Image (cartoon, rainbow, N blue to C red):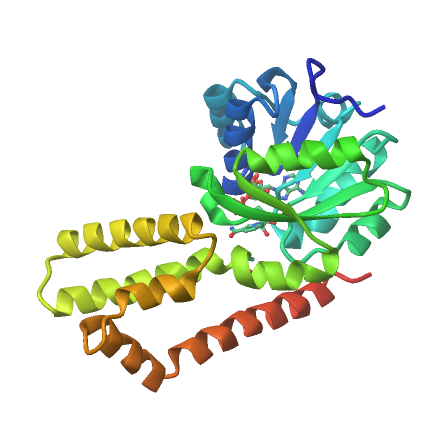
Length: 280
Ligand SMILES: NC(=O)C1=CN([C@@H]2O[C@H](COP(=O)(O)OP(=O)(O)OC[C@H]3O[C@@H](n4cnc5c(N)ncnc54)[C@H](OP(=O)(O)O)[C@@H]3O)[C@@H](O)[C@H]2O)C=CC1
Ligand SMILES: O=C(O)[C@@H]1CCC=N1
C-alpha cells in the first residue's frame, strides 16, 4: 500500500549518489517532501561519498540493499544511463504493489525499464536539469499506466522541491531534453560569448562577469513576470537606430536564431538516437 503524505512518511531510496541525487535529496529534505530518517542512499562503491551525504543531510546510507529497499515506497534511479541495466537488476526483486520507480536516466524509456523489471510496476521517467543544484530545475515527468494519483503527487512534490515540475506524455521527452535538459548549456554558451566580447571591448574579467550574471538574472525575472513575452521584451529594449538594433541586425545577418533552432532540434534528434540504444 502506497503511504501518502500528511503525517505519514514515505520511504525513499536513491540508487546512485551523484550530483543529481544530492540536489533532489537536499531540496526534498528541506521542503519536507521527504523525511531524513526515511531516506536512504546507496551507490556502487564510493563509501566516502555515502558518509558525506549521510552527515550532511542526516539520511541513511550504505550497501544493505535488503534493509534499504524492503518496503520502499519510492525508488529513485540516479545512476548514469549506461548503468541502468545493473541498477534495475539490483532493485527488481524489491518492487511491490505500492512502490514507484522514479528514473532520472536521460534517454532510458519507460518500456526499457518495464521490461527489465518484468512485472507490472509504477514508473515515472523524469528529465530535470542541473539547476536542481540551486533549487531551480525545470523538470518534466512522464508516467506509465500503473502510477497512482498519490504516486504522481509524491513525484510532483519531490521535483517541486528542486524547482518547477510539469507532467508530459513520454513522447515529448526528446523535445523536453532538447529544450530544458540541455537548455542551461545554451544560456552558458551565450554567457561565454558575452564574456569574451566584453573583455575584448576593454572590460576587466570580474566586471564583465558581474554585469553578465546580473543581466541574465534580471532578464529571466522579467521574462517570468511578463509570462514569457520574449519578443515584446526585446522590442522594448530596441530603440530605432540604437545599439540593440545594431546587435540584433548583426545576429540576423549571421542567422543566429536559425542556428539556435537547428541546434535545439539536433539535440532532440540525438535524444531520440540515444533512446534507441536503450531498447530491448
Ligand atoms: N547532468 C544533467 O544535466 C542531467 C542528468 N540527468 C541524469 O541524472 C542521472 C545522474 O546523473 P549524475 O548525478 O550527474 O551522475 P553521477 O555520475 O554524478 O553519479 C552516478 C551515481 O550512480 C552510482 N552508480 C552507478 N552504478 C550503480 C549501480 N549499479 N548501483 C548503485 N549505484 C550506482 C555511482 O556510484 P559510484 O560513484 O560508487 O560509482 C554514482 O553515485 C543520470 O542518469 C543523468 O542522465 C538528468 C537530467 C539532466
Ligand atoms: O547532454 C546530455 O546528454 C544530458 C541530457 C540533458 C542534459 N545532459
